[in-house]
Image (cartoon, rainbow, N blue to C red; front, side, top):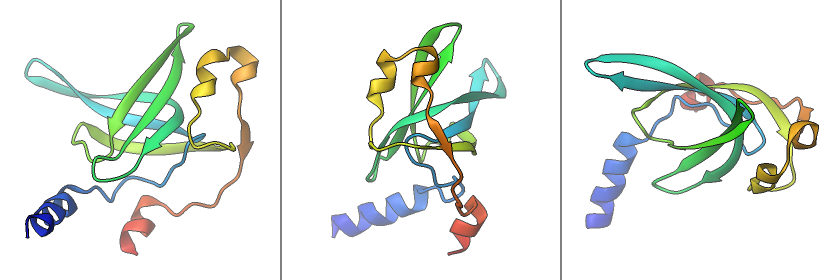
Length: 126
């Protein structure tokens, strides 16, 4: 009984407007930021190094800012995320790319690959 209620509630909150991406992809996450009574959108661009599945799905994005590594974890169904753009895809052989934390410069590059992915609108139509 309560399981059905929880599933219905989660289905209501689930986002369908995000593109499909996997670890190794470079994405730009547009995040809503509140400053006092004003609200603005700020982009956070980096490589997806991990994804967590399930009802509280999330993804971790890593970027290098002024020579310092910055990671941010975004819940998939968060209202803070305005939109997500898929910029490029890379070939990786792991689900978690935590080894990138120890690499710098050219050693941290990933090999680009062309992947045919459906857009968010096409995925929502299915």
